[in-house]
Image 1: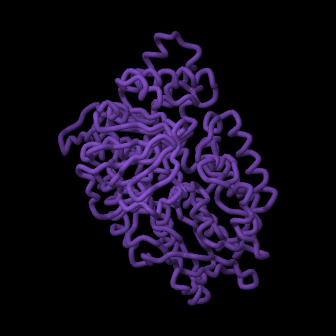
Image 2 (image 1 turned 135 degrees about the vertical axis):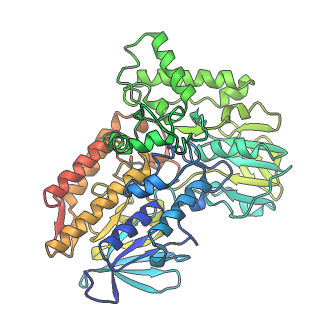
Image 3 (image 1 turned 30 degrees about the horizontal axis):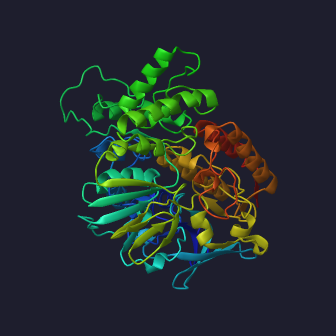
Length: 550
């Protein structure tokens, strides 16, 4: 594809799992490619999110690449749910094993991207005001990579330390015998709180909305290490009774189950309705899922995500668990959500609820006692002043669109992406947006992305993009753009399929509700991973129907 040595065939922005695999595919295709990464190393979200207790909520042997059978066989995870350091080690291993670093520019941030119509290339500008030209651009910028930092009054006056879980320091943070306040009780806080409570003198948890979480039941993975294995079992959402060798032996069928699933994960699925079984049977299933742990809990019955009455049976079960685990009934009540389970991303924890039985933790309900302002000594609510040494912001992210909006992206006819998406992100398949030719997004809004096992979704997206580029090479095409009609139809479809789904039933970052002024649309595609893949394959088989190529 190289015609002008001063113009790259492809620039990839981001060196997380999406960026690394995109770079691997680009090198296989002999493209003149460079990856640009603002961090000093690979890993993306796992480079930045290194707060105490950070780990993946997808089983490690599923949260891994499948493009290389050799990589699958050689890498050995140590725990059912991998920790952040181990996932980061894996990302570094991939970068080194496939010799990717030489094509990555670290410590570099892209500030703007402008499509030059008459030249048919993208002009990128980095933080040093250096210019980069490229035929194609892949935004591998991640869905959860721009921090949500609420603008608390007088926050700059606080004399203690302030940390955000999404941008944790690389050095060890000393919390020993300190008085700490943590704002937020979402997934990051749920993982962080049981860890930091071991060190702090006193922990104040400032909660706006309680969150559903189920126990991870994390455990070391079991290895046979060369011993003979007989009657190997096929894993269907593996559990702790399986040896790693059994999973690897059946990896192909294991992965196929994930490809044909709603969430790109091989989960143990129960095709029964929660409303069509006896109360005893229903409680037995919930108890079994609770004891085994992890996100398979939400697949305990097939109708939990679509039938509100069925969902309530699962929500009630978890509420009763909270009541039984937390000794103080008033604290238990504050920790108990009153919305459908699964509406917000279901968290996975290690003794989160039990932590509130300790003497050095206090829960502050921000709905009845909101934060008024910061002072040099701590935080004042409407009722009380809390003297603090450290404040931790576990306030989440500007999801799906935040990082894209941080780059001044300008397409044809001087259209800015931020302006075009001001009423909600409209694109085609989560891959491309009308008015922005030769620009692809990986796991963007309109794709299953955060509702799935992200690495599986990433590989599917990247494979589709490079099949498209190859098609263009073979057919002498240098320009591709999503059509406005296809984009409108896909956006409409995405909103329609979300109406009856439990995930659209409450206020969450899925609809941008956590960011003031952000348009409220359901951003990820909730129709299911396998159905989404069918649509993508149909589009490519029909010569990229819905796209304009020339």
